[in-house]
Length: 168
Image 1 (cartoon, helix red, strand yellow):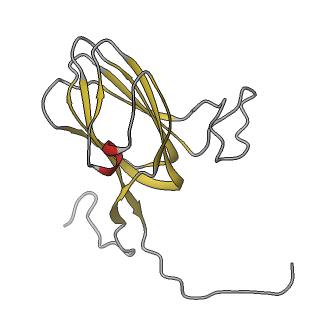
Image 2 (spheres, rainbow, N blue to C red):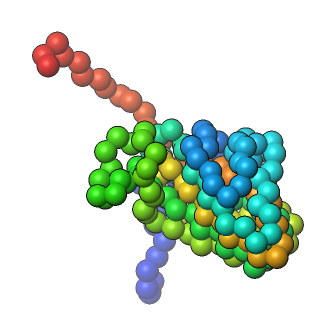
């Protein structure tokens, strides 16, 4: 006799996972940010006792696991906020490409680095976003961001048909 819930074979394929790079830095304050850490080819260093903000653009909305690699920064706080578009003063999204004079509102992850070398943060579940804003406040030790990339996830899609029409 079988008791309780039993595992059953899945009827759908597993979700794919593909490492992808973020596209660009749209704005930064409190730190001189270059995109080396987005390419995995350089570090973003946030000095001690600094408040910095870096807005990163993926260029399109995606579903992905963010992956953040840091060193140092004991007693720092890193907040990652995810959104498909930024909002204006009235709370409207408007054009998703616009970032000037707009703020981010969305799901957030808060990371408190322990100060060790090459620590990696990746949430257990994916996020849906176009923009990621890093808001960083350091303590007495500089924080080094080595890398920020994403792991795209989604069910495999095979296009099996197409429809076109000359009607508007």
